[in-house]
Length: 292
Ligand SMILES: *Cc1c(COP(=O)(O)O)cnc(C)c1O
Image 1: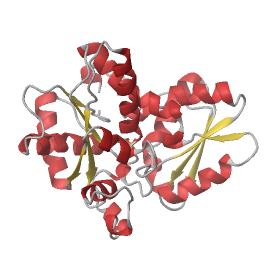
Image 2 (image 1 turned 90 degrees about the vertical axis):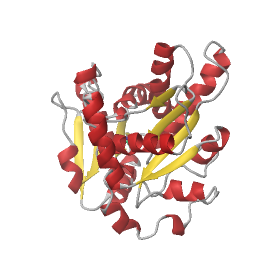
Image 3 (image 1 turned 30 degrees about the vertical axis):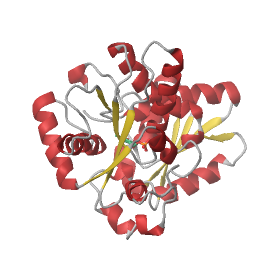
């Protein structure tokens, strides 16, 4: 996104999670090596941060995602493991490695460092605009970013200078695989089998497969269900075709080529406008989570 002076080298907002996660690990578990399992964007972001900071990392990714594993600097302290299988298999291997002596699991959504890293997006927006936005839009796979932004909003409200109302969360998923969208639409706190029909096949048909998390922190206390409830939030299901349309329009008007997941988010904003969920004078924070 150099077009807009946004120098996120690995091209997604996962890069905001890496520095606080490495630092917290160094403070709390000195000498241990961080282990991250991912379908690509997270492992690449952590590898990028390792390449510039020197923090050691074990990255575990599915073999089919190896093409996503590049860094702009030599990543001499990254040990990369490719797993035969999908994201879930990579997670299993990552868990085994993390259980070994001297290793440390990065902890996912439960790690406050990861949530706070993503909350920085809201801090930066408020630093610029000087008040909390009315709406926050983001495409979600796990929802870590949305939870992080929610928590950052609570802190800004208790600060008092930036408004007293939580931004309404507008979270989007890519059809046909949209378990949180379906569970929320049913009004359910639990994700059921019926929310993930033909999961394997549906995931293969997704435009933004980084959003294909089968076990997101939705039901857990303080998770996606709770942050949606607390903000009168909305969930959107976005088709591949809507993504491609959003991508074209965004690139044409803003000059930014979107990551497929960011296209899901932009498409959800179109839906919100069409359905009058947002008003023209509202302040909207659209998290373009990846591009360039
Ligand atoms: C991971 C990712 C998301 C979704 O983030 P979650 O924390 O999994 O909800 C959105 N956009 C991009 C580009 C991503 O890499």
